[in-house]
Amino acid sequence: MGILTDRDRAAVTDELAKLAGPVRLLVFGQQLGPGAEYSVETERLVREVAECSDKVSVEVFNLHIDREQAERYAIDRTPAIVVEGERDYGIRFFGIPAGYEFTNLIDAMQVVASGEPKLSPETLERVRGLTTPIHIQVFTTPT
Amino acid sequence: MRLAHHLAVASDAIRGDCVEATEFPDLAQRYSVMAVPKTVVNETLSFEGALPEGQFVEQVLRAASGDGGGT
Image (cartoon, rainbow over all chains, first blue to last red; front, side):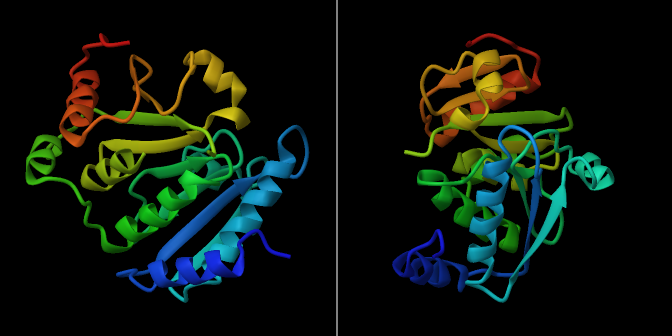
């Protein structure tokens, strides 16, 4: 029994058919300690999503063993998902992307696949040439 | 959340994290997350609720300019 229902799968397959290019989902988890069950669930969910499109690949890392990768992607807690397109654009999910966040995961996959953010010309102009590092953290809940 | 991710694609200087608050109570406590969505920019600026694109970008750029108001 999967996490996604048949109906979910059909909807995800439709959405991912629109992917303009390849997407890599890098999952960082841990097998021991508090929250380990969240890592297991996240990996299962990501794998089920990846099964819906040939363009999506999954790599799973252990935060404590694959330290080089964790450092490279600046991951310090689990479960974490890096949504990468042609390159790493800086998109991360911490925690199981369930409920409304699941929609955002699919949206993030679409935007990294195209490399073309859906933002107004004014916004694109304003952030162009930005050099100060900006870290945006958006806290959400599954419902 | 969508905006943070699209901004991350638009600019190499921007990273967008979606954090599930109930799974990371330490972070939720650190940033006094009482309601969601709550957005924290560069540890210094935060706001609650979903803002329209123009206002969201305004807040993000305020943090970039070092203006830590608006908490």
